[in-house]
Image: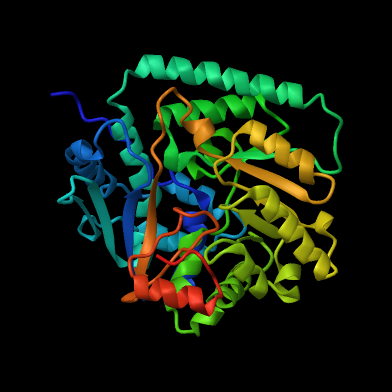
Length: 402
């Protein structure tokens, strides 16, 4: 029997926004109960169900880990992380009883997390990284890594060629957003180390906190869909959940972490809530579904309607990007707004095999269903059709009901 090789060896091996959201939940909603569900959006070459035993073993190991003091010191050194949250993490340990892996009657892998939101929300990125790495260990490793290195060299050449173009008003900057879809932990680290050494000044950081600490990079991230979704159950009118979530974020971070996510119920519904008050309080917005060119034009028009110069705001693109796509968006928008590009799968899992399109989304909070609608058909997620239809009615969303 081969030796057990852990996928996750540090609880810092996750994305920054898990900690920033978790801190706000600790301070304002520590009693919240949550449920998360795993979903694979494509058809993988090998059955994910065959990975169940190894995934269970990896989760057993994950739930034995604790934060180390140097890791806590690093987190505590980020100006927006508060000392009481670091003290909480010092005591924190993921609980195995909150997560269950099964194979459904249709043969598909199912993973559910149920329990206190504060103790469950960290599972997401670890689970996705575990499923990916366990799955991709079935393929010949050296051949895949050779392919990955060759493609990474091509990307560096593309960056050098692009750097010879006439500069625009704002510089081209991109980040690694690849933790959740990576081929493996070691390959992800190699990619980030290579970019840090060879892709400056365009490469500005990584969402992965462990790699940011290891390579002296800026950790990148603010909020994810689950944060806004949870406010669908936090006591305000459903119509006001986005405004309530943004207001809580502003109170928690008071000027830091000022990039808001726009597509939990679609960009049009978001912008109806993103009034002059929020336009001035937030530094910019993040795109994660729908046509990015149309989204950027819509956001710029919204700022202009509010009499705010879009050049003072940042548009962050993070949906299925590769470098050529990022270059095209940059050429289109860089003279009108600050830009940032979060590139995930194309950096961390471009190794010759089709990447898994896997997610783990919040589906219920405080015993109530919650929903993500999205600007892209197929990227939404809700397990209660009646709630989804009600949400769409409240926010005047057409053509997206289940």
